[in-house]
Length: 73
Image (cartoon, rainbow, N blue to C red):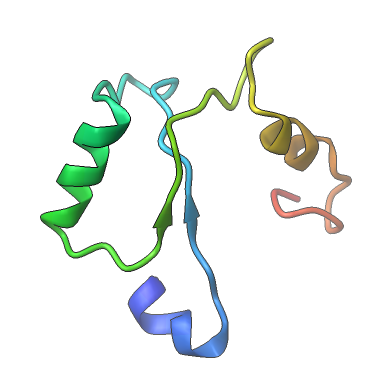
């Protein structure tokens, strides 16, 4: 998706999270090194929670947006 649409202004912001089937069990450094093997060209942030009481404030805000007005609507 990034390769196809970056020139049109699409920015991908990746937030690794281990709350979906334990898909990101590694440390931030391990995730960074793994991404390098695929020549990732978009921003990857530190691992966060996106659900529950420890959810990152950005994700809390995104999930609160009404349909059609937020990023997840």
